Image (cartoon, rainbow, N blue to C red; front, side, top):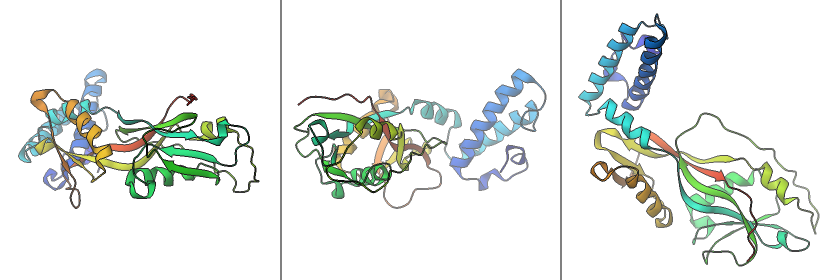
Length: 263
């Protein structure tokens, strides 16, 4: 529904997350109208101000303070969960390699860790077929390595970058241009969209059920992005997400500087 259609619409039938999104657009249009004058987005300043009041009133009926929600959302900046999370290690740094070793920093087997598993699935489409995957069972590799990705939470983005596929044909032993492989990996890759939701009416974050290895740093950071008197409640998500919850974070991989560490 366009903003111009909201004036005559039944706002009570619009889900909270959509109404909050429309309100953010109306606020932006009001700022623009005050600066330029005339109609903006098909509405005059007085119409926009009226629409702003109607939306704020409807949200208040649902126990949602639109201005407080805006302040809360402004605090939700990206933050890291694991640094590093994906590294390259092994024989590629010693003589003639016969494969390429990628390691994920999880104490669990990759197949048993839902986030590590989706990380492997997402990155495999960008990598040669001779990549061998392992977990950091002992918390660190025992040979030379270089970090590739951190694991972080980022607010949703609209754009996505795709990298080319590599051919499956290879010989053994193989020649590996490691820098080209790493350079061709995308700078940022979304693993799970809408990973964390926020319930404005309860100042509550809803998190999927994940291993404690990820949950602890995530819990701490979500709490401590707010001052003590405004600390949110954080709960594991059970069942489906209510329509009045807002998706505030995607789970993403963020590429890091490629720096070889000798072990």
